[in-house]
Image (cartoon, rainbow, N blue to C red):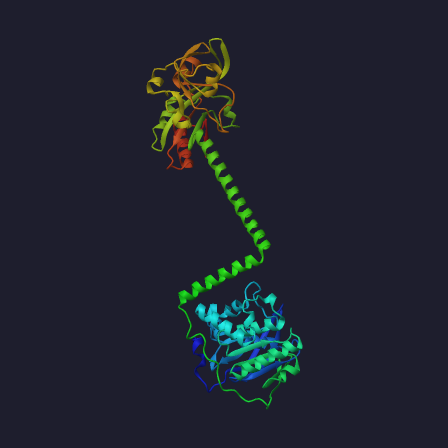
Length: 524
């Protein structure tokens, strides 16, 4: 069952507070310490009550429970006949905000804002209109003798003045119940007397005052004294010189409350304003904090940027070798004793069989040799590779000049060659366009029909050695005199798992050869 805290002041004939069988326990390791023992109290509207006792007697714990800052372990606590135990966190917050005012021994004022703004804080969270709360804060400070100090910050006020500001703050939302924890403990005698006089005046206006103190002289000024010892109420008596006050403080919030949305915007603005004031008051700390944030963010951005850039560069380099490719090489797997007996196993027909599979985009057979290459009076050792018409598609390389091999180049075993950038710089350093020039590869002439773009990646096939490419059929018949190829590279569809394609190619090759006399390398 939920109770509306705004309806608490409906019954004038019931006690303000009722506590029955109240127990408060705390865990201390494996032990349980009971601070309050079976407390029974009734406090009426308009009373001035002093809770007295030595340190450790439980008086502050009792005040925290009465002020809804803490909850009892057992027992029942009612305000105006309605149980506090059944209120949820939001309802308890509303109860504290609209019905209680707290006065602390150490003031707890915000050091970076003025006395007026300190007093206004409770009204900000209660949703009071901005102009109304400013006017009320100034009136409360004026009533407490601080009309000339409304713009002063706490460090510009004396201890007694700061306590008056905290009293004004306690009254901001009405404060029909004032809870004062050692209100004169940090003050000199004169300031303490002034604060006690203010509390008496508030009590005369109808405010219920509950004061915690260990000073018998202060307790003697209260209408009623409740003495605690070791968590038990050992005395509860009244001062007959007091006269019961029946009046109640007027409601402050009802006439000035804003809408929920306006209240939220107001709280947001106030929080922003206080943050700016705090930054202005602590410039060096703010500067160092901002510097730390800037350095931290810059470091994270730099590291992420470096990582992304490196990743992109590596992926570009890998792409230059051909992505999602599977290479099938001639010969039994490494370590297989059969490897020494047979190295001629792959044929162009094997490459064509793989090329016919639906998951394969293109295939390039390949065989390699190192040979002396001569152009006029320049002779260098070069790497010569026989490749298929789809070599550029498979390898990811591109032409900067000339043209690629075509189907007729393969079928007719043409003596056309494509050279890389190293070969161009080696044999044609002074020729801008070497297309049509003839190189002598061993004793076989070859006509240059294309020049590859420079490969600047860290994955380049060779750094200094010139490389020449010719149709693999020409390489087989005119250079090596062999009916076998050394390997072939298959470009796999990107929508197909490379591991599944590898397995399928392996099964196909075994079905064709009857054995695993080949090696497979997956670019993944």
